[in-house]
Amino acid sequence: MAEKRLQPKNVDLRPDKYDRRIVYEKCGRAKYISHLDLMRAMQRAIKRSKLPIWYTQGFNPHIYLMFPLTLSLGFESKVEVMDISLLEDMDNDEVVRALDAQMPEGMRIVSCNAPVHSHTEITYAEYRVSISTDKTARETETLFRDFLAKEKIEIEKRSKKKTVNIVDIRPSINVTDIITEGENLKLTMVLPAGGNFNLNASVVIETFLGMYGLSADKLCIERTKILLENGEDFC
Image (cartoon, rainbow, N blue to C red; front, side, top):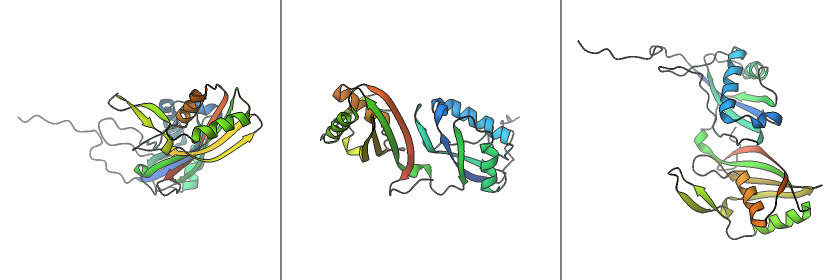
């Protein structure tokens, strides 16, 4: 007698699904929610919202959630992205209202739309940085401009194979604005993001501080845009 192969309990279910891209804010106290806790918080919020959510197919069905570009712990953002799928073709505004009502403190649903671009098309991210050091804002600005004038800015970067390589990050740092405001130096920078190469804004700042022996009294980093290769917004 042939051995009967186990099949997923929902193997015969092939419901229609409607993909949606959710844009949300993660600010204030919410910036200290880790990515793993964020996934749990979103799953709970979706369940409480009573949205007709689509579950993955297989032996262990679960809510389909996909975060195209994870945010570093301690960063704020107004452009975080989460992809979900629904069993019904609901009005986007209705989805926003239902899900936003269940968000924890510091998180807010901004928009809901059908995805246009694949997450593999993400190429850059824009960040706004506010930093004060043990120098004056003007002195810090002078040092940062000197930092940008370097021909090479080399860091140690660990590969997926756990080898350590020396990488020149200077060509990848695109600073579009530098201003001083009170005791703070404020920067806007566009850095590589996505699958091919990802340069964290905190790595740039830590490398700068270390190069000049500075200590940061205050450091705030906010992701403001997720961009395609041509500079257009991902979402």
